[in-house]
Amino acid sequence: MEYIISVGTNIGDRKENIEKCIDAINLLPYTDVIAQSSIYETEPVGYARQDNFYNIILKVESVFEPNEMLGICLGIEAGFGRIRTIRNGPRILDVDIIFAENMKIESKNLIIPHPRYSERRFVLEPLLELFPDGMVYGNSILPMIEKIDGQEIKKLSI
Image 1 (cartoon, rainbow, N blue to C red):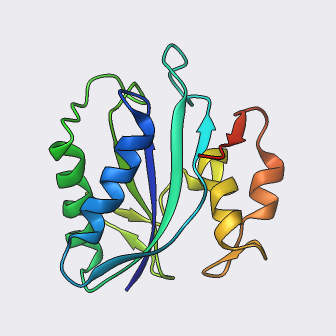
Image 2: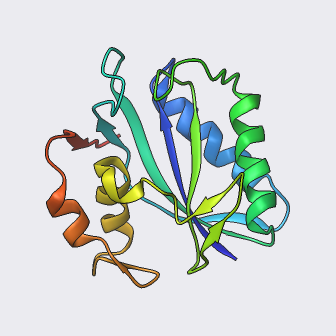
């Protein structure tokens, strides 16, 4: 199964956090990061009194089913020491499943596609880098990007 995963961080060495997260995903059995966007520096969304984030989008191929992948993502976050306190607040690592191919899932613990991806420039701009035609599993992201005001984003060359 192919996943689109968003990784964000704004605590500690942000670049190293992303690199170690990619390493952790690649260590999973029968799971590989097959493509990744550039790293983007982005303004926080929701709770503004915090440092800017580094964000990246990963295309991951894995044998794991979506609920298993959710557990893996939460486990990676916990392994980095993530503690959930302030909603949309500072975090050492945020690992979200945006898409699981063209599946649609709505359960108590998991909604795919991610319910707020279309409102987040830090998801859409890197996605456009991986899907230059703007079509992601049948979803046209260009109109979504055009609707977003603000949310400054800068591609980094690191």
